[in-house]
Length: 425
Ligand SMILES: Cc1ncc(COP(=O)(O)O)c(C=O)c1O
Ligand SMILES: Nc1c(O)cccc1C(=O)C[C@H](N)C(=O)O
Image (cartoon, rainbow, N blue to C red; front, side):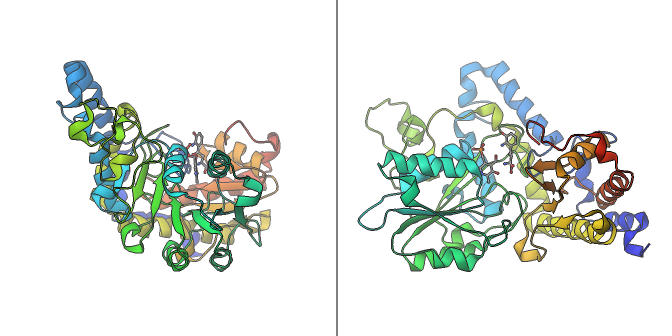
């Protein structure tokens, strides 16, 4: 066994880790190693207390909680938007907490997709998350355009990754809008958002990104890169809880643009309660809200984002890369004989926050991992995603996951389970 394969080495890495103390801020369960924060992040004590604070504001203030109390609900979406903006290189007014990825995508497509003349097509990729494709196809149908002809999905050579050069080559003068993931949800490939945005703008094409798998783990410079719009969820790396409210970014060059889907929360705050039938929409990203914010699905973010502000996104990215590098190194050294292949890009600039192992017995290996105290997630037919999280995972966790996987494989424990997926993971 090499030094790097020993538990002492893992412990040394933990001792040197400047973020290790954040682990105490989270509710980790005994005898459980959580590697699924890329699907649903864990509860922190701060998120719990900011949610309880909002509940208390309701208990004490009733309707007046909208404007009184610890965190007045009427301004909460803007406040959290502003707290999120430093994670994505945006200005406060460009960012709002609202909706879900899919509803925000509908809002962005309704606002930015204006097919005209030859420019009618939407460009996406063939490995993107299904909900994004459903949103695009339904928006095309609403415009009376056939998705078969108007949605172009760039193909993958290997079924795992997409080449930026292929995306750029598909940017022709029929493309009106491009929607891409920042990080591909299965393989964890991180796309070069800056280069893609520049290429799109050179061709006069609007470009937006789905940041589901990068927000809270990868730094972004959305404003400086000139990205037109972005959407994200907060229940993954931002630890807002199941169904936590998402967010969107609109570059300030577009602020003032009429929301495609309007509602009374699109209004300028100072006139909203005048109840006029003519919308006077906000001139910030607030305009792209629709109805009443889901306060209790948003309140945990106030506490959670404080942790991100304390740790800093650059330090989070450094540790995340280091954890996933360590996980890949141990996989190569220890698990190769058992038929695993590493399907995520291995270079740092091309890798998001999770690693992707492929194995023909992946579904039952995931079940065996869960039975042995490790929470991975499975994506059909053969993908095991593992996400060690900078704020609450340790190097020792990673080391233990590898030991448990080795035991499951060498003792064929996975054979106790069927090789079919469970309902979700
Ligand atoms: C890349 C990506 N896009 C969209 C979604 C769907 O988001 P929502 O259910 O918040 O609309 C998810 C995850 O569920 C995702 O991973
Ligand atoms: N959004 C989810 C949900 O509502 C239930 C269960 C899981 C999820 C997920 O986030 C799945 C995730 N986006 C994925 O990358 O597969």
